[in-house]
Image 1: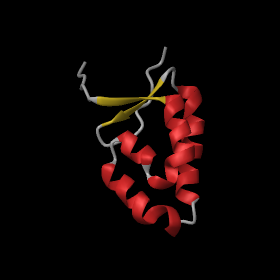
Image 2: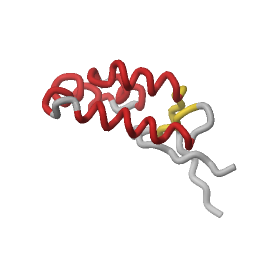
Image 3: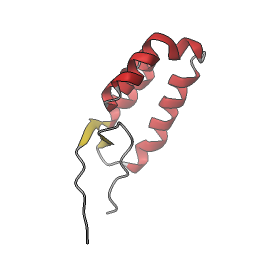
Image 4: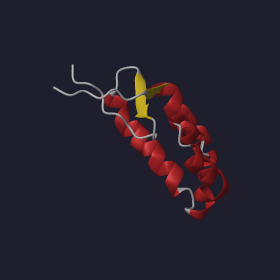
Length: 87
């Protein structure tokens, strides 16, 4: 059996959702995920160009993911969601 170890970034899920709600328009959620380029883009252009839809979608996705994770959200190096291990 081949296994690959991927380094991950762990973020408290309650803090992430709250910051996503209050500061998502400034790209804070993307910075927390490690997606610095998207965070800067969202801060400078993305939020007003999408009329606030992009931060709202990110917030809804975070809310939907709340039930799948125990204590922390897990992201890979690219900032993509890592599915939690089955119990």
